[in-house]
Image 1 (tube, rainbow, N blue to C red):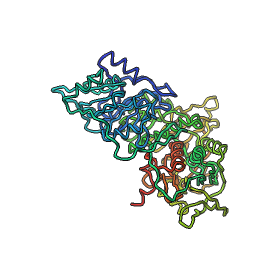
Image 2 (cartoon, rainbow, N blue to C red):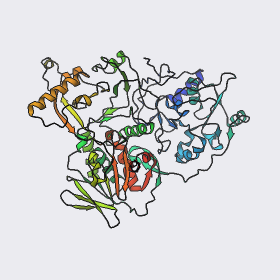
Image 3 (cartoon, helix red, strand yellow):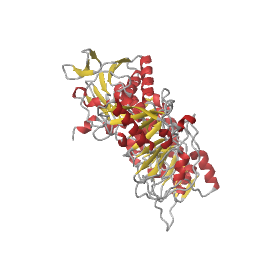
Length: 604
């Protein structure tokens, strides 16, 4: 097993100084916590990043980051792939490179989607370039990349030189040089034109787009701009009122976002105080091991949503996660990761973890955290209520339709009929009910245990005024077990190893025995913090929301009825709430959600 630390290798002192000034230093508008990159880079897919987690902004944006050439730049410190449907330039601060590593036929659409004040930060990578690039950065590559994540292949005899020109040329030259690419930094546009005049490079205008430009939809609450298309629904009405079915983390996020976007009347129906599934969630905020890349990017935007949202940003503990896996991971870049870790490094990151007693590989994901889900839901509900939303403690029993069959409201379990321009079903596992649109979900039970470090049955703990605490989230995929500790000291544990007895009706004695068994199992992962605690209660959910294919279900099921149900709801709630509200209020279809429409199940 090999472990690596990512770094940059540069050839000249001048390039090194310019690289540090323009590319490697923190550029976030909100954080300067990341540290300079040090060490040496591996030749494969395994990396270590000795960094603090980024708070909001990425250090570099890569359009086409999951492609072959784009993956070179995505492996740089703090880089993030720009997901399809997100406008380039909104994930980084001004004067930070936006690398465009897609075919030149797509450049026009990229240029149109980029805010005008960020276009000088675009870095065009390709054999074709245009007159408009004179104020940006151009990379003329003379290398090939055989597959995403692989090192570049450069001709040795005769040696072939790649050309770099423009605002971010020093930074790009340093990155390519560190990959073994021979690079020449060109000082003027005229010189670039002269050097490439006799090769295969073509100076051309960016061609006009073959389709109308995408509509740009600002999402100000989380500092995002998304691309979309107008909905062609002649029968749809202008939405002035909305009903949200379900008031957990997703439903409450949607309700607040609808009010924020100007919908005058928003009513949420939920008979529970904070959502049924939400209360049983251990609320891990993460994006690791979530293929494919587009889905991982959606989760990364969810993490960014937590950090960007003025209401929610102070609630999570951004402690990072130690994850043990049964196999080595392919860390292709674009997400802060370190590993596989040595036993010494594991102890350095979390002295209280027991992750070295069995086989497996341990990784650290610094950008991750966890949150008290009840606190988050109540905060969202309070703000939504202050803005004018209504939360009703009642369940929805049926949908109301007009003579054309369009959904125009709901009938509650108490027989109350409530009209609305749109009904949004965010009812978790209940979203699969025929009366609510019949979302394609599968059975997914869960049980989470809670422990208090203040009370203990250990005789030795009485002499310890400060019981050992966990600083990191621990996720052991070998044992099928997780443990985390919230800000108030509460320990949360769960996983497949703790599912015995799920759904059973137990006597008080049997419940106490079950809690003690759970405590013993969880103690294997965090011996001291769990050992100095008493498991007080558990929360069961007989069916968590899990779409049939594992991915979110977001969009209109039929006229007037919108479905919003997902796994990883805690991670993505601030993002999805805003995206759903934007689609409903602005009557657009956001490209970011195109892969997650309900209609994908119609063909199966």
